[in-house]
Image (cartoon, rainbow, N blue to C red; front, side, top):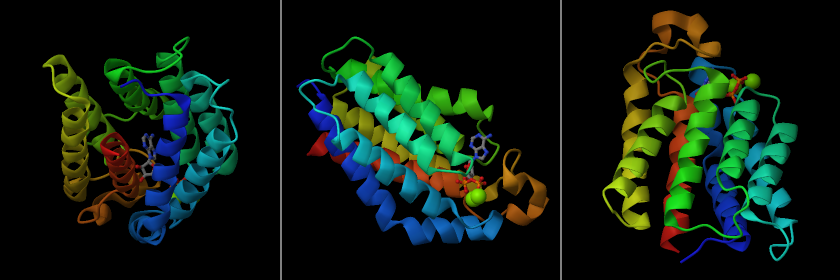
Length: 212
Ligand code: ADP
Ligand code: MG
Ligand code: MG
């Protein structure tokens, strides 16, 4: 079944709800190896994105417009490094579905993978550097691989969610090469990267969206 802008309104609502529920935990994770604002930043950004997408008329706005509205709102709401990273992610998702009135399974997975690619391009982080890329990249790869082997959308996002959780957990043993945590050397070992944790939450929201 095709995914419309009205469905994307629900997706952004779910993301905002799930991030809000984990806001304090994300701040605690960032408090250990950063400046403690990651939960507040993601909560503000996701709430602003959901509001901006909700304000569109789904009969008029195509999916690309929904992603672009989310990008702009997220960027305006967030002063932290996650702001431009997620703004780029949503812009790339919008570009991936340009001119489409609604999205089939393959287009939706491609939009999801475009988010991961956008974050990587914007932040120039490689996997293994203890950033949100450690959750996003394996999740996008898992979804694309599953899609290529003929899996259902449910299976694609189930595998993406698992890969994101594993990738997030793996950041615990890493030192950081990007962002604030890179200044702390070995002291960050033993702590999960907050951006990888919020990425895993958002990716799980995609799974929740697909199942409802
Ligand atoms: P700030 O450090 O400006 O307060 P946030 O707390 O919102 O920003 O986000 C911190 C998270 O941003 C980190 O945990 C990491 O996952 C992510 N991050 C930082 N720099 C980069 C980068 N260059 N590429 C990808 N992710 C990054
Ligand atoms: Mg921070
Ligand atoms: Mg900050």
